Image (tube, rainbow, N blue to C red; front, side):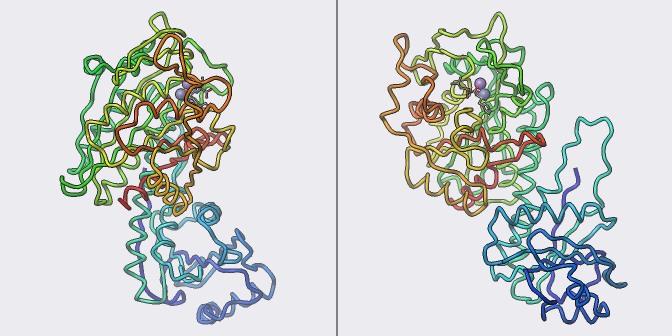
Length: 491
Ligand code: BES
Ligand code: MN
Ligand code: ZN
């Protein structure tokens, strides 16, 4: 997969030599005076466009024009009112723009940032580079007949003022790195369950450790997990021919004496529900049930390639949830690594069972914060739909930092209650805790279950069941890599 590269440059649009000049423009009734030079250089082309009412700058309008010998193509992109452009709208705009540019037979495009009418060049470049990188991703790995990739591989981010160039460069690099992390997460999540198994994920961790000096990894197989008493995690893999893996990646970007933060990802590489078998419709989508793990891999990759100054332990609890003669049965009781016993009333509530042991394991790193990421409950999709990730936390500062990171990146989360009142829904007559809480508040009781294992540190839980993938067209979103990168970079 070839990746987009971003360069920065100072200069006027009409002075550029580029196969494609992209001019983002706010809504106006006539050619903006800022582009008078360009209008002259093209023999009045731009004035004619406005005169003929072929372009007004209405949001998402996109017009392709023939330019001159120095810039044979000009693309006008309507921004609407630039004052109310948010991350989400920029993402939509980039989608439109990429739809146009990806069909052109040119390798490079120069994008005039001044058209956005903002001084926040670093943020703008970061958002554009991230979203363009995401827009350029296409899943092709298991296609027998691969589509021809777009010619475009390079963007020049242009601004008139020299003073903005350093900021544009920083933003462009940072955004591209996060975008590549997002695309990596999408690729892992899009891979089918017969390829992306727990051991496949282990190999990914090993490959990240090979790629980056700052990353190391250790992998625990089932024998080691049994020794540690991780019987909850192991109970999920009991029916599968695939060995469960506890994958631990260490990223060291700051001195050893600095705080360590933990990420814990749910890595169910396929969730049939186990003996509490899921209905057949859309069951294929349960290959995305390792979306939390994928986001952890994407975040490690992005942090490592940008050299973020943070120390991170990234844990992935990987297993396949299958029914079989050796599978866990409803009513079975297991002892977790924490010593708490669990009555498994529904084998389809398996995410919390793998996470609880991984969360107990995280204690040994004396983390300053632990964030778990999981496609945990259908109930979260009912509550929040597909736009907001569900956020739960036992610490208000941590919750605020994550909400903030979500706002900044347009990868938003919404806080949900973790009140004591909900806890008794998990009571069991046969164990310390049941693994389901009944029909009401399903996303909350899942978080309550996890909270029993996270008392030793500031902890937050991100339920990404509604945000990790789209159903039409089907595909992983790479959320919440952008949120996590932003959060960790600010530690
Ligand atoms: N992986 C699913 C959650 C899920 C369902 C994510 C649909 C996205 C879309 C999880 O393992 C699960 O099956 N949860 C059950 C819990 C229930 C048995 C308490 C659910 O949500 O139905
Ligand atoms: Mn399940
Ligand atoms: Zn699941």
